[in-house]
Length: 233
Length: 233
DNA sequence: GACGTCAAGATTATCAACAATAATGGCTAC
DNA sequence: GTAGCCATTATTGTTGATAATCTTGACGTC
Image (cartoon, rainbow over all chains, first blue to last red; front, side, top):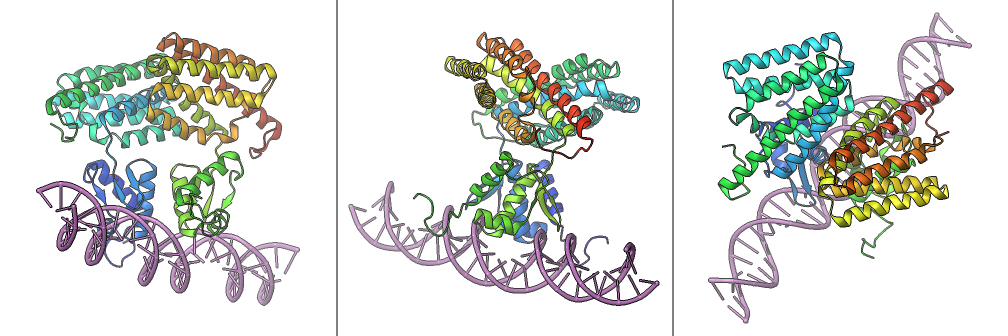
């Protein structure tokens, strides 16, 4: 009962923002879905005014688009844009790998190694979803070890835009297996305190992801003709 | 008379946002300066409500910090953060140089070359401010030629945070001269359609800027003791 | 039947008044 | 003279009402 006891939940302004962000991330709010202020106010149990500032904030970080006098809708990121985002992530995460090799404490290296081990376990079990989670945790551990708040924030922002594509690459046959090897190379380079190797390994890895993404994109286009279908096959 | 004729200027919401952004960029609004809603409303000739959304937007892109119930002030970026920002810019602009080498049209290459020529003229004349402007234009031309909207936006956002440091590096003795050589190498590599060389050259260039910035930062600290003084010497 | 016009409804934008909160300065007690 | 308390003021936060704008569907004309 730390929150206000009156009425229904009645979130604060920032909680409302986080909730909508999460809803977009989870796919509960789909791309191109219209967001009317009244409906959101009802759903979040807040006033229209706070819905308004939530939408302004989301608009500013590019998750929704605001059209004057016409309201807001969840932004739809195209395949082409996803490739651009991934290209940006590639060089930024390569930078974090480099800096992790330079700055990581022994403790952090251990935690990075453990994350890799967990990925191996999931892979052996054929647990693709678990593998994907482990993958995210490994990247997070590397980013933390790089001690670069600014780059960490940039990467997080970029990731938020890629939700629609987050599982696509992991689903192509053989990809998880080769992906694991790529991660192992990154971890080894960081543990060996070799910044050039760490950067190169991370770059290789994400370029593989990029080309996989580009391939599945054209494959999907070829199959469906319409550039519209968002559903994962 | 395309704008509404009534009252004083009376900007629109987006114009107000741009105006405050510009004011922060130009240094008219200084770091740590408090921004009261009423004062801004008066200055911009808009209602408090639109000032509020302007502040929310600026808060979201990290140019001002909003403290609940205590208002907003212009965000002060530290030397350490400036280095982080520059590190991010380094890898992102290196990416644009690579992509420019791959994607630039003949026309764009010409325009990039011309930008370099103009920098040479300014340098010969000893016009440092003009040289700095030319520098910005060259980078902009390369970014445009890279055809990567996403990365272009990221770089622009990062630049917006570096206003306090924008002239510091250009003012150290000999720096403009060596800087010009670095730029020439970038342009040549792009014109030669050599993506690896273009990326490496851009990276070298910005790493030079980074280390120059770091050096002047420690130099200033050593001189003043207080980590507070923002004024350019 | 297609097109354009117009009115009704829905939604966003703006505004002013009020409430809540934090900063300020003076006052008293010690 | 200093510290703590309290009233005053300044500023932000919230609400509800109203205005402006867009969408939709009906209607009439060609």
